[in-house]
Length: 255
Ligand code: FES
Image (cartoon, rainbow, N blue to C red; front, top):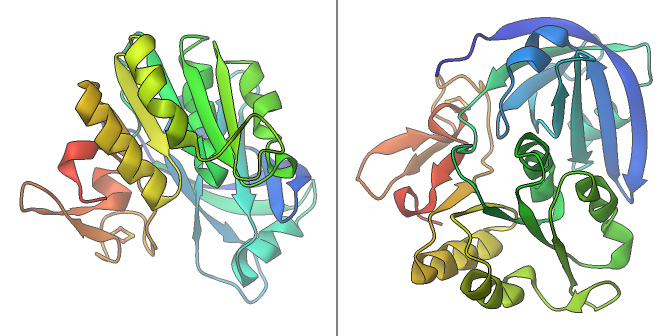
C-alpha cells in the first residue's frame, strides 16, 4: 500500500528526557498520525537556525485520535542535540510517513529489540493489541525505561541486561532459543544492534519462524532519490532502505 506523504510544520507538545541522552518528543501532526503504520519513519527538519538537513526519526507511536506522533531518540550529534533543546510550543517540519513497515498479518509475534531499536517496535506492539511477546535487552537497568512503556501493550516481557542489573544477565538473544522452542510464535520482529539482528535472524531461521528486521542506515533524502541508503540484497538487486524498507524479511538482506 502506498501511503500519502505530507510535509507539514508541526507543533511540539512534549519533550521529555527518558535516560542519559535519550528523549521522547511528541508533536501534533494529525495528517501523518492518521495514516502512519508501525515501522514507518519521518524526516524532520528544524525551522530556522544553522542545521538545515533533515534527520530520520522512527515512529514510536501514532495516535490518530489525538493527532499526535511520538518519537524516542538518542542524542548522537549536533542535529539530534538541537532537537532535544526544542520545547513545547515550538515547531518542526515533518515529512512522512516514509518507508515500508512491519507485517501485521500475524497472530503470535515475538518482538526482539535492543536499545533505541525498541522505538519502532513500541508502535508495532501497540498496533498488535496485546498479541506480542517482547524480548528486550540493554546495557544496564537505567536504560530499561522501555519495560514501563511496553507493559501497556505486550503479553509477556522478557528482559536481559549486560550486567544483570535487571532481568536475566546477558544478551537478549541468549533467551531466544528457548522462547522459540516453547512459545509457538508465528513471526519474529527485530530491531536493534546489527549483531543482535544477525543472531535473531539466524536463530529464527533455525526454528522455522519467519523474521523481519528493521534496518538503520545513514539517510539523506528519505524518499528513494539519492541512493545514499542503498544496500545489496540476497536476490542480487540493490535496494533502498528508506523506500524498500526500513523493514525487510531477514532472508532478503545481508545482516
Ligand atoms: Fe536517499 Fe534513501 S535516503 S535514497
